Image 1 (cartoon, rainbow, N blue to C red):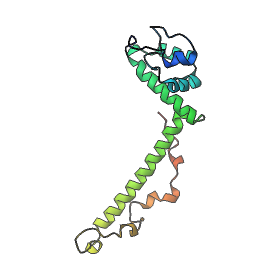
Image 2: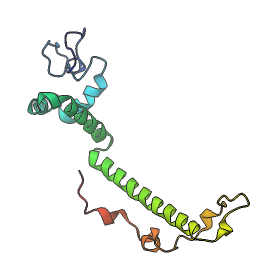
Image 3: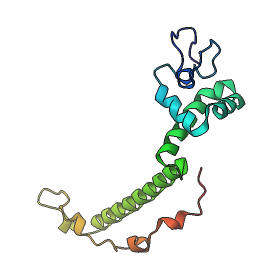
Length: 160
């Protein structure tokens, strides 16, 4: 928790709510006077009263983490009012699946090159730049055909 005595002006929450900031202000440790936009986002999504109730339910040593989490949730909810954080998580999961697919393709192409005679090596013994011409259906990748791959296959996975 930040030192409340060192502040010289009202916290961002008290400025936004147009009230006098007291020495025992619940919001002051988390919203400095120059963080008015940060509090405005939280206030718009949760409301000051609900935010205060949430803070009261959280243990003192976990409040800063809770505030950071709620600020992030508010920012994401303002960007994506329908899905919020779940939309961000789903987007990241989809990107992860795409990257895993790309990694598997790269590994399959590499395995194909390693198992081929030295015709893929140039005069310096390095791999020739024809790797992109290697057929994708070289064994283990056939089951992972890009045309039959959909994100819906993972819709049963729980969101955390």
